[in-house]
Length: 450
Ligand code: UDX
Image (cartoon, rainbow, N blue to C red; front, side, top):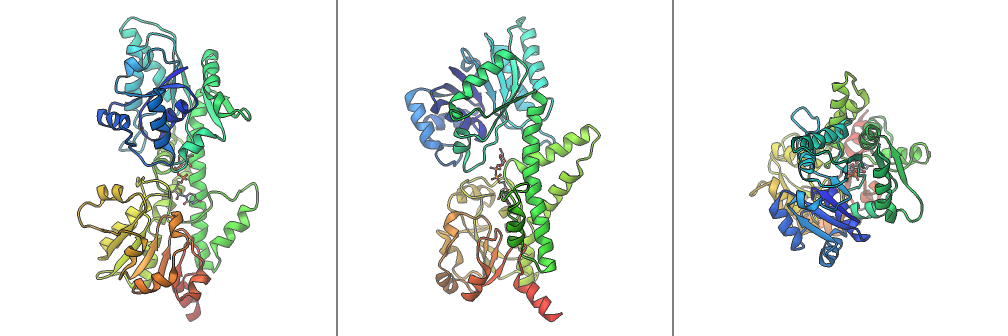
C-alpha cells in the first residue's frame, strides 16, 4: 500500500513516519526544499520524542521517502493526506490557502482514483471546498477521474505524538464513499489490532469533532483556572478542589490542572477559529469566548504575584525562569505563557535568566541578542536571582535541591506556575511559595491583618 502525506509539520511528519513504521510505503511531500533536504539527512524540523529514530529507520529502508514533487508522489498512492498549516487569518478564522493549493495540485496531477483526506484541523465545509478544488482543476485539463474526499482529524499531543499515533484512543473518519471507507479501514488496521477504534461519520461531523475536542479541553483548563483564582480569594486550595471534583468520573481527573494558561499551536488557534465559525453562521459561542478571555488573563497571573511580592517596579531585579516551551517534552514555544511572562517582567524593568532543557534554541529566535540571559542549567539560572519562577513542568524540575537553591537565590521565594511544589515542604525549608489557586504568602498576610 502506498500513500502520500503533504506537509511535514507536526501532524504530517509524525503521521507519515508512523504509517511507514507499520510497513506502508509513504512519500512525505513539502514545498520547502531545505526542510526536505534536512529530513533526508536525518535532521528533524521539530523535537518530538521517538520521531527521529522512526524517520531514520524507515528512510534507510526506503519505505519512507521525502520529496517536493507532489504530482510524482501521488502516482500509485491510494490516499493523499493534506497536513499543511491552517494559520489563523487576521480575523482568527483558519486560512485555507495552503490546503486548497494542495487540492488544486492533486486535481491537476492525479491519474487514478485517490482518497484525499484532510488531517489538518480545518473548519466545517472544508471537505466540500477540497472536493470543488480537485474537480475544478480536473475540469480545466479535461479529465474526470473519480476520487473521494475524507476528513481524518489528528488528535496527537505534542511530546507524545508518536505514541498517540501508534496507540490511538480513537480514529475519526468522515467519509461518504464506500471505496474510500474500505481503503481507510485497511490503512488503519495495523494501529488497532486489539480492537476496532474507528468512528465513521459524515465529513462535516468529523471536521467539527476536532474543534469540539480541543474546545472542550481548553474549556476544562480555563474553567479550572477561573475556579483556582476564586479559591485564592475565598481561602480554598485549588489542588484539593481539583482532587475533589476529579474523582467524579463524569468530570474526570485529567486536564483540570490550573496553571499559567494553555498555549501551543492548537488550543489558542482552534478556540479562536470555532468562535469565528460561529459568528459566520450568526451564532455566538459565549462559553468559548469566555474560555479565551480567561486564558488570556491567566498568562499574567504569575507576574501579578511577583509584583505583589516585590512591588510594581522590578528594575534591578533578576528572575530565574524554569521552562520556556508551552508544555514539557517539546521545544514548541507557540503561544507559550513564558513569552507573556518574560515580556511583562522585562516591561517592569526586571532581567530574566532562563533555562529550558530543550526549547532554548527556539527561544533564541524570539529573544534575539541579550534581551534575556540563557543559563547553562537549572541551578545556574538561579545564581543571584531574586526569585525562581517555574513556568513549564519538565521532569527535571520536579525535585530540585532546595538547600542548594537556597544558597544560590538572593531570596527564598518560588512562584510556581504549575503547582508542582509542596507549599508546606517548601515552608519547612524556609521558602515562600506562590502557587496557582493556593493560599499565597501575600494573601495570608492580608488575611492575618483583617
Ligand atoms: C492538544 C490536544 O491535547 C490534542 O489532542 C490536539 O490534537 C492538539 O492540541 P497539545 O497542544 O500538544 O495537544 O497540548 P496539550 O497536552 O493538550 O496541552 C495544551 C496546553 O494546555 C498546554 O499549554 C498545557 O500546559 C495546558 N494544560 C493542559 C493545562 O494548563 N492544564 C491541564 O490540566 C492540561
